[in-house]
Image 1 (cartoon, rainbow, N blue to C red):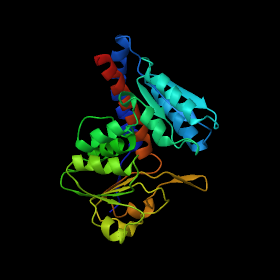
Image 2: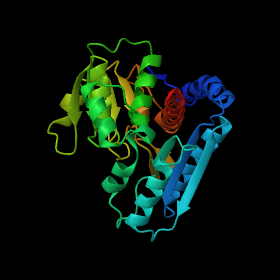
Image 3: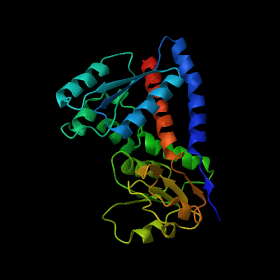
Image 4: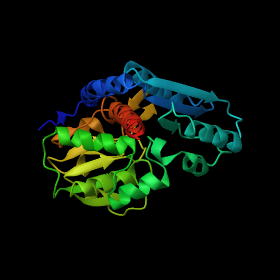
Length: 283
């Protein structure tokens, strides 16, 4: 059995197409959805992500702006800029590109963003709402993973799901979203013992550990859906956290890297930004 590919690029394209009439409706009301991305320093990987976000927003007819700040920018300056954007009615979504330079405390900066403009879903208010099941901006990567899972047509309710990784950006919100879909969820991580025994019980396996080829084929339950969140550069090649060649011979569905989750992350960011503009318009 060879797994069916989950084409994140194609699904992301459909998502963006569906957003276009929503953007046009806002523009007719005199509101151009505004997304501002702040990037501090010149991290090459971040620069690629930021460029892709800017292009995606502009293709939709949104006001996509990138503010590049020098590496030596101090924390107070960055927070002052965030507060200025909070007060700007033409900016509906604010995103601070991570990671930040080591002399800046990420938590302080993210907490300074107005929760209603927090299109990354990292503010404690949005994280808390997600935890208790209230409507909130959901982190883009986990939101994209759920969308990909639903395109398989497989009933998620009642399935055993294992998430490898416990970050605030992917692992934890991923587990909460799977719980909302009535999955039975296990979060595994670097301290988990007998990991392969746990992963082999998973009907849905989400790898978000940041280690290339970490999940081998013999860690996958036959017929499982495998979602690879990892993007690792090895010898100028992008590979995931899952050994794709091995896992695709065991799984029923699998995401490729690149062309899987990454494309959906940007599409979900666009969706969150449009929703933020719609919420502003509704006021």
